[in-house]
Length: 373
View 1 (cartoon, helix red, strand yellow):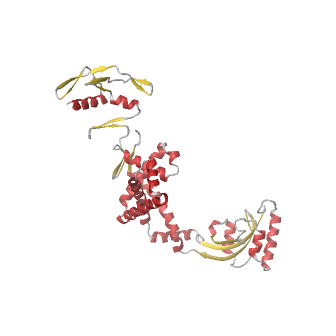
View 2 (cartoon, rainbow, N blue to C red):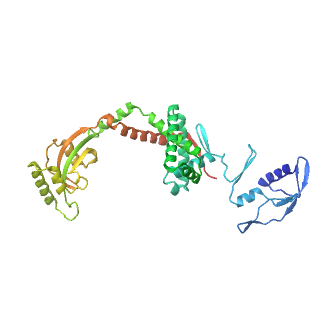
View 3 (tube, one colour):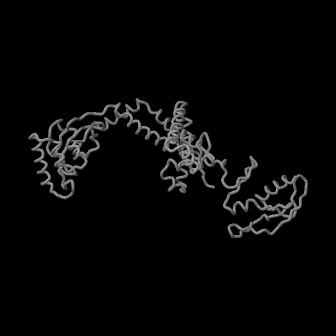
């Protein structure tokens, strides 16, 4: 009987004032003595707006809501489960989306894991916008997991297990578990996070076919016929400033020196040797002026034009760019095959497809995100 009455009294003091000198339970009357109790919190007195403390059978009872909130803890009554939540309620739904919900506990775990994988987490963790973006990311992973195949899910589980095993080997299992403890996550939670993340990645990868990749390759060539052109080029740069910065030249002076270099090369002098002696380009000085199998699209327009149009093996006239005058010899030129660029194309298409999902599809699937306490 004593425990039953205590439970009733504590429950009542959460939401309402117990007044008078008696409370009732199951038709039985109990007598309590109200006391003028002082409530001191770190040396500061706080007074409850309602609900005095009282003594019953030698035990002192205080208003639970008042004490909890005075300590900065939110109090919730869960009618369905007949549970009092003081502080965070891990079962509280903080986000809903088509097909599921996210609880406070699930979000808190996912958020804690960002400290491991997101280098900006520490600086951003208190930002409401950042917190909302993390909740959105959790929903992304869940939705993409739901869309994925069993093969993608199995591959993700295997990869996650392998990654965790690698970390344990690299750092030692004891250190690995200690680190997780410091991040306030468990190995199981880490595994779950990795599986969700890797499955989402696998789904995006699996959704891109070779036909799509080939179409992208052809489209890039249609947009720019030299998109995949590579060339091996030797050059000697005569800059308006020497390589070490000690000499300044006018355009006329630089052009005259470049023409002198051109003449020497056409008379049979060794290109690599002259480049090491004369070029003002530090990037190719040690290679004898050579840029091997470079994408022509990475060069400034004038240099690119010469690399594409100049006859192979011939020393051309000086080419002016923003850097000065270049004496150029194209040693080889070719176009990258589809197979050789397939992986890089896949990466760009994966990123584009993921962005399309995040920007176009995801907003229509998220119903609510409310992380307020």
